[in-house]
Length: 169
Image (cartoon, rainbow, N blue to C red; front, side, top):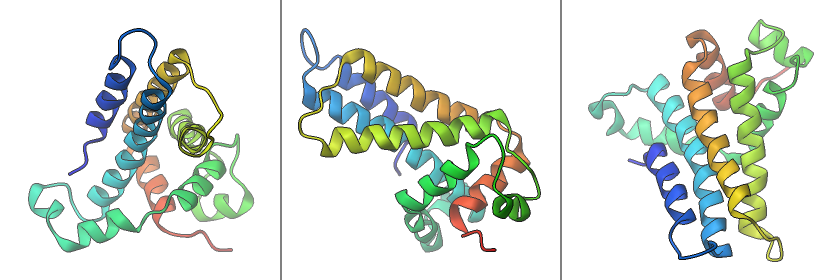
């Protein structure tokens, strides 16, 4: 099973994997690992919520089906909607609330920001990254997972459902 916490450790290790300033490859891999820590934290949370979190549940085929069904773009779309000061009318009707708490908004904002950084790290061949930027990205990823875990259970469940199910008018 992919362990989001280990991905953050992996990102930290890339910062110190070479003597002197980290090279661009290490910085890029660290950024990617930090994003994937949050991505997999959400995937695990959704799957645990819908299927169950015991070792037996996690071995069931439907666990993998749920885990693999989420897509980066649709997750980002939900996070873009959730991180705003107030939800759009469509989301408000679907969720029954005008806005999410600070913690859910924070993890949604972090997801969007981390995804943008990962795209730059993975696909922009001329962009340069610094150790300070990478350290900030790792801190953002750690914050996102902690903010999500600390959010009220009802809001976490609602957010997870939004990640899985498309909101329709």
